[in-house]
Length: 47
Image (spheres, rainbow, N blue to C red):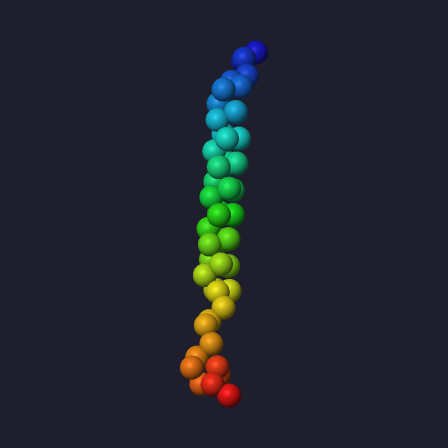
């Protein structure tokens, strides 16, 4: 019977976790860029 390679399994879990964190970070940046409020124009401020 083959011996389990725990180091390989651990490395794969770490890679998966870091990939998910990177995707989450990218999504946050994309949301932040699209949801930035635009500063009011001069016409709106002069009433």
